[in-house]
Image 1 (spheres, rainbow, N blue to C red):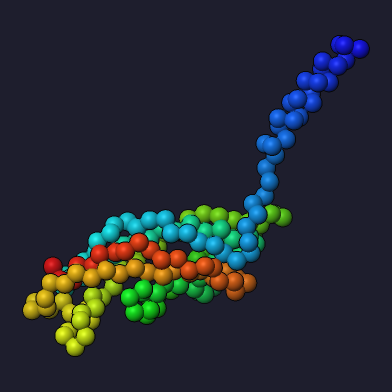
Image 2 (image 1 turned 135 degrees about the vertical axis):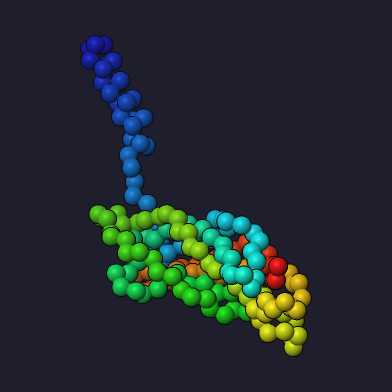
Length: 168
C-alpha cells in the first residue's frame, strides 16, 4: 500500500504546481485601452530650415482584437492640447483576429511633425519663422485616442509636455 501512495502523492504534487502554469487568454475590455509610454525627445524646433519631429510611443490592449482597417480608414487620432485642433490622423495596419481568445496588446509608435508656435494674441501669425520673429519658447502636449473596426473609441491619453523652441 505504501509503495502505491508515494507515486500517487508525487503525481498529485506535480499536477498541483503545474496548474498555475496553464495559459489563460487575456481578459481585456472590447474597447481599446491605451497608455502613454514615451517621447523620443522632449524638445523640438520650429525653424525656417525645415520641420523637426517627435516619436510618440503608447501601448494598447483590445479585447476583441479588431484593430486596423484594410482600407485607408484612420484609427489613431491626435489633437493639439493647446488649442484642441485636430492633427492629421494615422492608420493602424490591419491586425488579423487570432483564434477564440482574440485579446491583443502591443505598442504603437508614430512620428508627429513639429507643430506651430502660438504667439501671444495679435503679435504674430502662428508658425512665423521669419528672420525678425522673436525667439519664443512654447510647450505642447498631444491628446491621443484610437478606434477599432467595431467603432469603439479608446480612452484619451495625454503625452508628456514637449518643449517647442520657435525660431533658431
